[in-house]
Image (cartoon, rainbow, N blue to C red):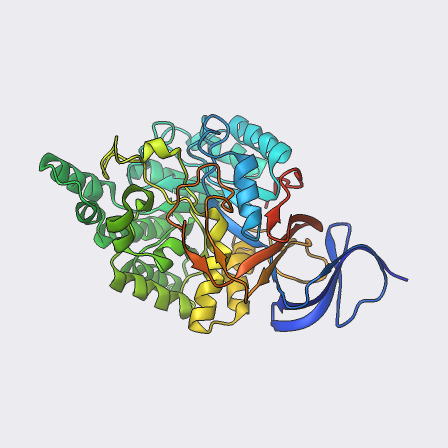
Length: 451
């Protein structure tokens, strides 16, 4: 008789080739069996009748701020938030912590903290900044997922934007290391000049902010990075793309055989510039939320399969850094707090637009795993893979409140939003970390995942 650590019974399981009702057997943290009916003994059983079982989400783009700024968000609160949203692996970006992850020493210290505190698995990005070109190789050899650079001003003195010479030199080295460069793609020259013009005139409304970060600034930066990639051979991943015109440039590069991928974020798909007008600083991000017409173009691109993946770009801060009593819209910290809601957003879009759930699994799990060299263990429900699952109720809605949002700071664009689905459970390498929608915050099962 077979012995399992966990059997998930009776769920509608999202397999790579479709959705089917099967049982899943888990042993030693791996998927050991998938069958219509599993026989055998088990230490633990999950009755998934009426529920859907998806591969655990891999969110390739979050900003936790530990060490140094844990009061913004740290591994404890951040990983609980990710778990509550069905995420089993997140990739933490290299900025906002002190020090930034631009040296091997900083990387290993962040990994130590994550291994100690994280509820779910995690990967770590390294940074490309002026002056750290010689740190790229040791960072790569120590296990970064890839590297991140900014083409626009960061607002963070510990992590500066790259100039063109640093970018070209870094891209050449990253290509030789076989790694990927993720880019925040907005033109610093365009955005800084427009911002200075507005502030000199005392124009700081929501409409003024949008006008300082136009679509053309994103397109120019994307196109420039693609040209540099052609010269250096560096693989690129374009983060939080917010315009159809930029996607068109990326698709043209793909058609030429270039090694590039593109993500967008749920806030660009579910919300638009009206939210910035209405809610102010909690809806401020860069690139900004676009007008409603552009939002609909992005949704259409998603439904057509033109985005490789979805990620949250969870970018929190203490509310006092966004408080409109102290800061106007130009001065306030920019970033959307919403890491818990990417899978729920993908499900909302899938249900609204009749998109197969296999596509949701691709956007949120299998495509990220394949792109960042984790597909040997993560991203799909296949025998031998890590037993990472998001168990969801498609017919049970979830309204976001401060009480059920696990982030350190509760002020979010998503507060009050009702998703048509809910996360019932999250399982990381066979360990239940969310039960009946509640994160088990005393569990720290996460471990550093290296490509």
